[in-house]
Image (cartoon, rainbow, N blue to C red; front, side, top):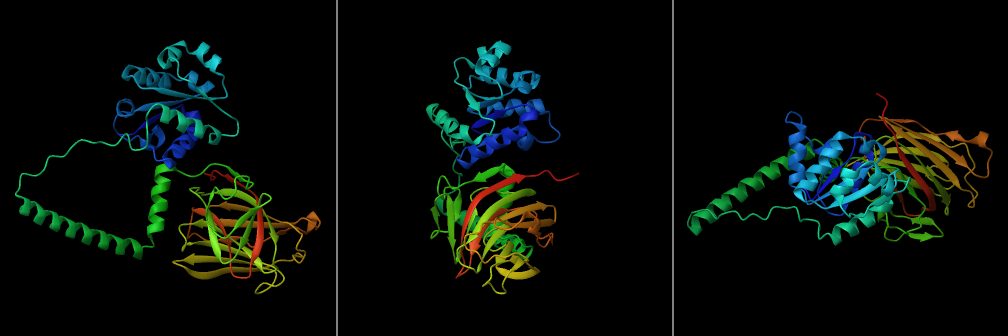
Length: 383
């Protein structure tokens, strides 16, 4: 049983995924077709059952949705069940939707709609959560509370069976853990796999540190100064709940100390990831770009490449561009005070150990730098 059914047309599936993901980050359970339908049984029966078992229906209303017979069926079925509606308008006004779909207007009654801006779903999430609260729907409300009858055994007999079951379950968990660990599935990796299966990959993201460190986990001693994150070693921090596969990203660095800076890509957890280190004029060795693969905390140097740019000016901003596609991760570096023709393509990393994961930054002792203006755009892999 889910608390929220997300009704949408196929053309809006990315927006529906983002809405569902944001709701689930707040603790709600959702149902949407692309993830939760099963192959084989009738999709109509599956959708009907999902609506029947939901508490609220969120309808993503766009020009494509207004001509969808399927979305109309879902709206009618939810109305028949008496579910409350939360309409989210995408590229269409409330008046236009009501004029073009009078049957939807009748079904949804006086439900207040939310307008999604062109930038995406993120701004509507607080309003959506507030609306759910007003409707009395809280995370966990969809869980079954049906009582399970007690076994008709004497108490000592039930206790013996319980102890045997606990011992057997513990043995199976231990054996499974050993098998998973031997295959490289750490607890962090398993949690990552479950999060991807549940919510999918993250959408486009821009960080200007206007809201401090809201989107970051770790780096407790780091601080935000004039929309820049001041990173000082030792330590690492990751973007919260944002998992990427193929992507194009960029960010700006300013070396406050001439040792260097580090960033982490496709991290499975805090022990398994790719680490990239740019060393400054006092790095070890100076002015190089290094690529590491970390497995269970153990580093393996994959690439060491000289940087043929002057990184000695502490007022310079260093612009890093990354393209991660399949097994290849490509870096490019520019320095603001130097001519564009001096920009450099850094070493291309070709490795298949980690195909997706978190993005983070870090520093060792003696390293300190500013981080500013991060953009991440997910990319579809070529067929």
